[in-house]
Picture 1 (cartoon, rainbow, N blue to C red):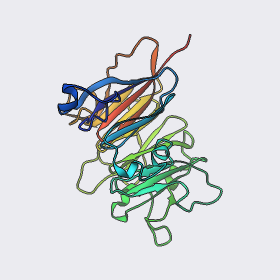
Picture 2 (picture 1 turned 90 degrees about the horizontal axis):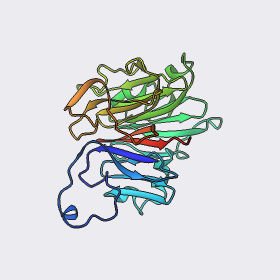
Picture 3 (picture 1 turned 90 degrees about the vertical axis):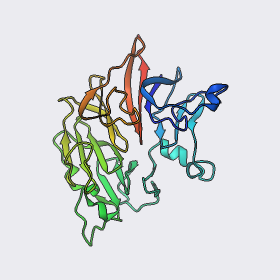
Length: 290
């Protein structure tokens, strides 16, 4: 398996090599502006977790990390890196941390994924129900109505994501002030937005809205502070948004429309997953076995 990366690299968070030597150790690292191979393992590379200053993933030989690991996810918080990798914990942009087990959900709901945006959290249950909670000042990110009986700070179901035409929600992603949800039938929905700011996908609202990516079925998605990366059923990678740190892997400053990323993969390799850090993007590939 191979991991490719592009984007913000001020702390060498896209470099999984051992300690740099010579000029590489003293020179200020440059951002990466197109997808390049950063890690290989013949057996296993899990989808990485990328924070602003560090990236970590699990391989067949154990945990690998790159960049500067802040104390909040270092040894002072035992087990947090494992929880972040397994999507059982998340860190919001405002520094708040949530983990599965800390919130009171109905006993019948098995939470399988937890993600964070700038001021709150989104949880996905095994049955496809999506829950949200956070700062009521950014109500559009809730995806639901805020009432005295269902306040912003208490987890509550996003009812508009139930009984969708292409089945239940199987994945959620969030960052900045935008949230994504993917159905088992490969449809993508988005909601959110910040008053006075233009959202990545244009005029979003607090109501989950279908997202069209050149009429492709979507099998994976991820989002950074100001960009989105998705994987189509055909194995193509599309991106949209800001590219000021090279996070789109394209030769443009930004794009308001979806653009297919030109990839030069090794023979017999195909893309099996995508991830985004705040200002970076990752593509995970796997070799086909004849």
